[in-house]
Every structure is written in C-alpha cells, then in structure tokens.
Length: 372
Image 1: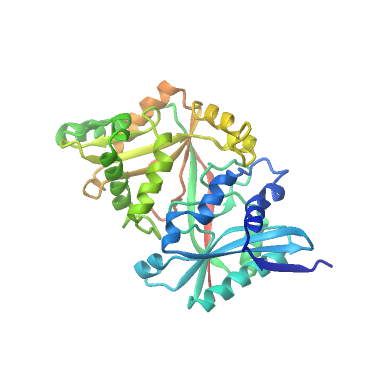
Image 2: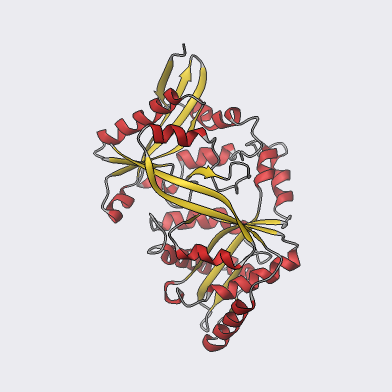
C-alpha cells in the first residue's frame, strides 16, 4: 500500500520538481498543453501579484516519486473587494487516487483556516490574469495556451471531498471566415457615422508607452464591474502584462476602436494559437522550443480570442460590432478559419454574441468552493 507524504516546497530543487510534475503526469495525453518552465518559475516567484498575495506550495510523494501538487493563495484585495474570507487553490494536479487529492486539498484548507479564512475556492490564479477553472466538458479538445487542462477524474475527486460549483465559464469555437451578420454591419456603420468612431492602429499604439499604459487602464476599467470575481490590477501588474503581451499583439487579427478624440473606445484582441507549438516545445524554449513558437505566431489558421471589451462610457452601446466587423475582415485576409473564445462566465449576457456565428461549445470550466 502506498505511503503518501506531503511536504512544503522550500527549495529550488523542489520548485523545479513542482513545475515539471505535470509533464510526467500528462506525457501520454494528446490534449495537454505544457506551460514553459521558465514562465512557471516566474509566475511562482516573481509575479507582481505576489507583492500583496501570500502563497504556499506543496508536493505529495510516494517514496521518491511525486504524485501530486497544489498551491494555496490568499488575495487580500479580492477579500476586501467582495467582503469574503477566502483562500484559493491552483496548480492542482494529482494521479488518479483520491487519497492524494484529499491530502493536497486538506493541507491547503488547514493553511487557509490557520490564516483566518473560512472558504476555499479554485482552481484559480492569484488574480484574473492567470489560468483558472477546472475543465468539466471538452476533454477531447486542445485548450488555448492560457487555459487549464485536467483529467476528468479531478472533478470527481473535488466534489467527493466536499466542493460545490461556484460558477462555470464557457468557451466556444467559431467559424471565423464567414464574415459578420448584415445587422451587425449596419449597427457598426451607424455608430461610426453618429459618433465619429474609427478603427485604430495597434502598431502605432505599441510605439507610445503612454498609449500602452492607457490601453491597459481601459482594459482594467472595462472589466471592473462586469467580470465575475474580477480584481482590478495594480500599476505594477499592468506594466507587467503590457511587457508580456504587447509584443504578441498585432493588427493582423486584432482591432481597436477610437473615438473622435483618438481615445480608446473598444478593443478585440486575438493571438494565433500556439498550443500545438507548446506541445512540441515540451516546456522548454531551448534548443528548439523557440522555433516552434515563432513559427506558430505566423500561422493564423486558428486564433484564440483573448480579450474583448469597451471603455465604461461605451459599454452597452453596441460598439463591439465595430471591432467584430473589422476583425472578420482581417480573418478573411489572414486565412483564419477558426476562432476560440476566451472563457466567459455563463451568466454574462456577453456570451450571447457568439450565437451570431456558426459555433459550438468547445470547453466548459468550473470554479469550485468549499466552506472550511
């Protein structure tokens, strides 16, 4: 009989083992997308959210073999904003043995109680920028690079251990080269004429540091009251996200809408999918991972829809129709066939927009919660 031992990650060696464990767990799985080890190391040690979040990591071993991992976090800005006393868990991976899952989750729960928390929810990241939501439908599909993948038994384990659904996020796969409905085109044209709205240039925006900063401020403000569990970003988080993501954003498949004062009104940001490239890279940029990723960045057949939104003053005006029309035209020119939506809360009426296109449910993700 296995003798499982859980221990806190305290050394660099343990941290590397923590990061690499899923590579072994999912080595025969065709859907799993490994994160770059260097990115994971930075997330667990240098993420700007760690300026205000606390976290601990644990590994479960069977002898010398690692069989499970988990990270527990407390985000005080989330708790203050929503009046909660919650910890969150993430980086949750386990072999198919509920006793390993029990040891991982109970350890995280005990830590939460010791720190004055009365609930635990997850899987989540420190903030709203990272991977979150346990996969409950769509196991046959390859996820976008910024989304989790897990075995179906994860859900069986967490529910058996007392966790209940808090919310679901939905992702859709759309046909991207058929254009937009005629009604949407009419609305976009009317709004452009009435309010002097026009398409902006991302290449120009990226050269202006103040405009980049403003872009992420609008992004921050646009989701503050409309995204479930959203935590507004700090200045340092905004700077970090701009540094990480801006090099990959271009006018080929993304679009911004400016008002008559050339201020940002709305945006639709997409990336070429790099999931298969990351599978080939196997967590490493060198010696050949960088080549696979670079090649993928110029293949626009499938794109991942990352963020879509509008500045607060333009929300609920139909302004999204403008960047939808613009992006549809760009997809035809760039040879894009498919678009995969970012996870959106199932109760958000914004998910209804995908019903205007040929689409199918691609993945469903769930956040679980438990009183402790």
